[in-house]
Length: 342
Image (cartoon, rainbow, N blue to C red; front, side, top):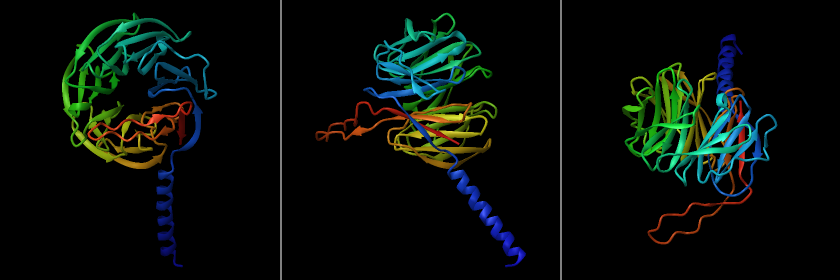
């Protein structure tokens, strides 16, 4: 074999190896059993205290990430809970209780409910603006956002929105909160000083956005949409810059500043991992196989691991003619959190 041929072969092997490494970058690490009955929704991680909080039916389960075990004490009195947001600097957490249109205020040291605050109808996703110390509760049915002062645990504002809000992300330095408006296929831009919407950006070709994440350094937003697409847009102008295909039934989205990877978790049992190659280029580097139902996720920025809850399902009964198909029933005591890492 000539030196030229050897050189070409070496280059080809390097390219193939590089592709293989990229495709298998994230692997299964473990699963954390949760058990119990009922559905789940959003999970959040407090990296400082090494705790994970999982919204689960009428309570919030707490996982100690130091040993990957469920704490014996859960946060209760949270009917229809969608999100629990720990604010470590105040040793206080807030939950969005969808079935009672209230937010619980919880002492993080005791996990006991201290008080409850009124929100709009159907509180769902939440985000925190650390610069102003404010919690934003997004009311999915009420088409509004309730703003809470985290230090005093009081409601300071209610912001009308153009439609049904989903996930949101805050950029304290820019004095902005960005929220997906699912039924309008747009992002609402909230001025955190004025507590009002200052722009609504269309996500086309993305439709019905759910998850959202932010690359604050490069001024980029990532929105996961139900037409099986992740959209990247400029967080200053709202211009859509790129999009990549993802799976079906998406809900969660996360961005890792250290690796420049964006994640889209989907209920079809896949998580798409895309690389922000440049501020204008987004490339899929891995389609990670998870499990059916693993549609929400949380990223631990310290370990770069991702956590996705799911469970086993019983087949849904056949619907009557013209009726809306029922959701599959969750098998009791099968809820778990899947953990994947680089």
